[in-house]
Length: 318
Ligand code: AVJ
Image (cartoon, rainbow, N blue to C red):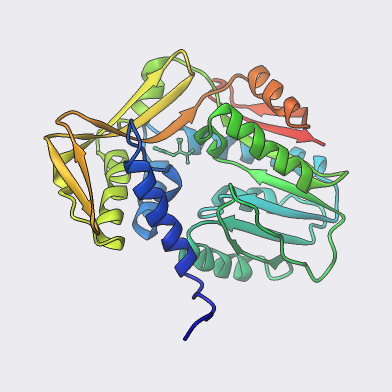
């Protein structure tokens, strides 16, 4: 039958296939990091967050524990709290405990099933708060749901240094779309990873247990399984290093031999040692990030960091 509405899952897997084919066709080859987060990838990321080497999550969590009551009072009552890339919503709980009369919590994430499970647990733990999960790729336009009690403005929560995944021009575009979404009285609470010594940075992305490697290489397994591709996942390895000039960790998948990836009718040739780029993780100073945000219409209002200044949480207002 013609003109049948596609199922809910179809457009997402079509986008995945499209982006993979396009990325592998480029020189140099690349794969978008947003596709790390299938069920296994999300579980591996949660494991990364518990690693000794990965200081980011526990440091941000400590900042939240210490300052959440102060943060809560910066966010005006009547806000719809919208979280970009909510994952397991662990840090959000601390914030939710300190918000003044929020109208709803809207976790936005690309991983549909993980999001549904997390939302169910939140409904149990926060019975008086409306939980309205949205499955979406927040880099593309998406609309917010209507809450029972109308919101006067939006408070966007964007923790985890996820903004670091975007190149500065993309980050600026995303921040602008957030500032436009917030409305007057609204704002953005964002976590950023700070510039620091190379050893600490590189260790965080090359852990001894190899969890980050498994997380990175899971992208190839996902392509193999979901796109029915012919890929020898064993013949690749994880690579991560700090690029000083660009202030970012760069993550790649390296081909260990000359080989071919086949997806349907299309073949992609790889040389021995060839790199497929999978992720950037930009590191900022508070001043540098504030300047970027200012270009997107957001003004620094407050910032909180840990004693070692490893990580920062910034409140920016429209
Ligand atoms: C989820 C984007 C914050 O950049 O540190 C962790 C993802 N990649 N280890 C990061 C990641 C490899 C992470 N972010």
